[in-house]
Image 1 (cartoon, rainbow, N blue to C red):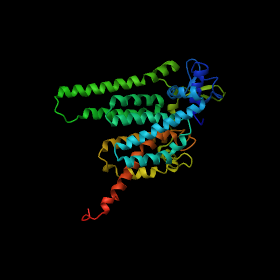
Image 2 (cartoon, helix red, strand yellow):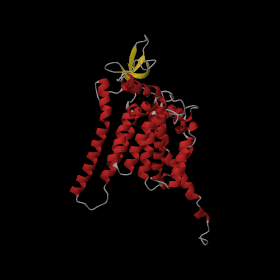
Image 3 (cartoon, rainbow, N blue to C red):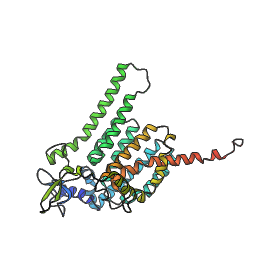
Length: 348
């Protein structure tokens, strides 16, 4: 139970043993920045979605069940990496990249964990994949839940939804009347927005339950020890003060937590970005690039960027999304040095 995952488990323990979300008697220290000050006491700082979803595993197998849940979660994430890469490249390339990322990145280490970052990345990636497939209604559900799972997903989800709106209103080249065309696009957009709002309702309700407002989260009510040892409320939003260039260097090259040194496969990613124009669906590739860069810049500015036991779990989505550019580099190599190109024309 490394890092935050102890406190995610504490939510389950509190529900099973006490029947509430008050964690005063379920954790050893109340004021180390892992709890929030709620209306009735100390409540979860982090999202309660993963504890609720994984509770059946705990009831069946106790703490070991949470490891089983995490392993299954990682398996789903690995399948999603394959499916996402399969949108752009052959199954051979997508499979090769998937195996490389499953065994040669931080995912291997975080398999033996109870990781909220794996959980939230699964939801984000599932929503992105469905949107890229044109399944906007279904995609809105995991995208909405991904915000519940991890608040920093908000800007990433907004970009994905804006892309979906752009594609919906771009048109499909048919000869329908302007009136019918507008009605169809408006209907699809409205239903997608409605489903997304409904998917966020549990998050809003949990905020209201804990803090009295659907728009106040635990991160805005973080409990830490003051000078006199009393609880002081800190707003987590104010913890993005790292100078950007310094933050970028640290996030890339730190010995223990730098993503380049702990995930050397990213070198292939940077190479693949240079060949992005070789891909037919360039708009989708640029969308993935923008999403990854947004998360990267956010974490480069984050004061607690290095609070991971290995690599940088805050950049898990960035690393997973980078797989499409690694596949692009593999695709370039396969075409550049393909067998057909090496056979003389007269023989072919």
